[in-house]
Image 1 (cartoon, rainbow, N blue to C red):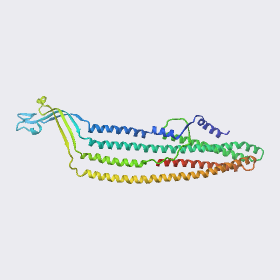
Image 2 (image 1 turned 60 degrees about the vertical axis):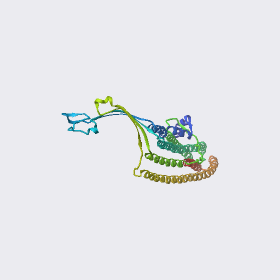
Image 3 (image 1 turned 90 degrees about the vertical axis):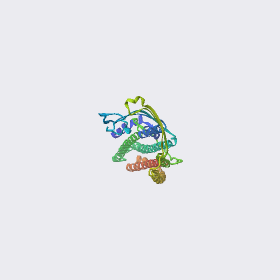
Image 4 (image 1 turned 45 degrees about the vertical axis):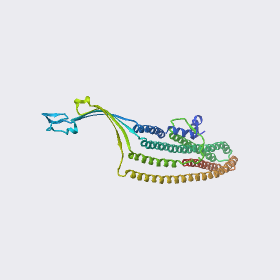
Length: 425
């Protein structure tokens, strides 16, 4: 056994002993669980729930606050005093009008404001928050769909390397099984020494190709682990991909998305229109409110009332805002129509590619059957010295190329099937 063979066996042995079988579902499940963007989206659902509580707190719960004020309003040159604080200054004193300033202000008040009759006011806020939560949930579906496609595509490509390794190992086994016979024929003088060298060179080349495929497979599995955010260092042996064409949904994702986007624009319009609703608030306060520090203990009281706000005119902003939203809705419809067209084109192209590559596989299967029959005939004739080793090696090389082409065609069928499912949702 030469050195390259030892390297291949040494490198592959751990994979044979400790490899764990994994399928595409495993990587998808781990990817959906570990992806930080999806985790962020899940947390946003809690954000929108809290936003509902904020809307309730701001618009239905009493708003209570405490205020304290001290205003210093002195009079100058009042009855012989340079500075004095009084609500009754002399006519010659200098300072603010006592009727307006009262000589100062001392206040400490507990204030309460209670919104009244505003259920109709806060409903648009709840509706807007609900639609935004739905948009966020739908964006999660798009993130999941994108991640699934990436993982499945990488899985298919990586599995292709495993397929190529399998048929290449068959060729190596055939070459190994012929070598003793060729050696014996060389010793008998029925074959030339270069025939043995040619067989040995082909076997070495195939083993090197096998090693490179193993490297490519390992890198592919590494990329899969990264996509799924898996820290597991265990060696994985991929199972055959199980992918089939999915039926069309009752409603395509893009249609739901654009419907929600349009509803969000309408919700924004409804929230904007809240400024034109009549608002009523009950207000009250209690505490100290005085302009005479010496009489503070008698200036403790309370007040209550109702605040009414009726919008009348603001320069027709409501109609202008509606016109803006109508423009945005028109743009949304244009994008929706374009998305529908692109989706149908992508689905049709994927189905066409699947059909073409399946036809290619049928032809390659026929070619492989004939090549396997030819190899069975040639390998016996090589032993008898009726054909050259060169002919046998060429037949093996042609067989390897056909097997590789079939693996690529099978991979393309799976990739376009995955692409079809990606758009058909």
